[in-house]
Length: 270
Image 1 (tube, rainbow, N blue to C red):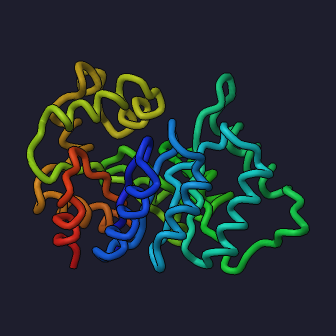
Image 2 (image 1 turned 90 degrees about the vertical axis):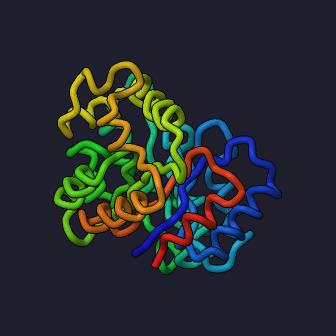
Image 3 (image 1 turned 90 degrees about the horizontal axis):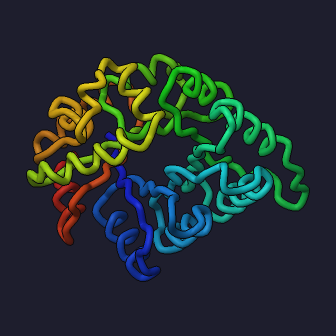
């Protein structure tokens, strides 16, 4: 049962970053995943988190390929893999304006694979490379050109589909949003932010059987419950549902966090 923490660190002071990493490691979680949006450059932040811990896996969830060159990404991944063997996972994703997502990401991977870095050979073990993939074509690309996929904002039904599409040998790390205590307005705000602004999440939810009515007005109760799970027992059950559906790892994003949230969550682990 592999479980990690997913969160944004945008705006968090370096000291708080280190303290969170140390706490997550002490509590027995397997990894920290973090998003790159308006905060620190992803690979620099990964280095800070790796340096603050001893065994914890650090994963970008995801580093935006549209914000860097393939050469820069490949160089950073190799450097982190050399410095922290077996502890770094490179999650890649993003959206390049005016380009088809599949084509743009494939071209970026081509550039990474063609990068000439004679002074920085591929480390052993090579860091896992996973793609932010939701739809069938991107999951196929993850199976073809990466070590697996990192789906975000998905219910267990998607996890089952992703596992079938990836095949048995690929790594599947799934994000799951949770509330330890009831806060319906927080859950709805979280869902609304993605279904209102992110076309690819809308498309993915429609593939899973959700309708325009489910996507309207902040999301139906059915959709909110599918994306955000509330309560300790329900959280434990949802993590198990993802693992039973084929996930190798579940990274939990705690909404409405308090100082005791991660400790309470750790109490759900076997």
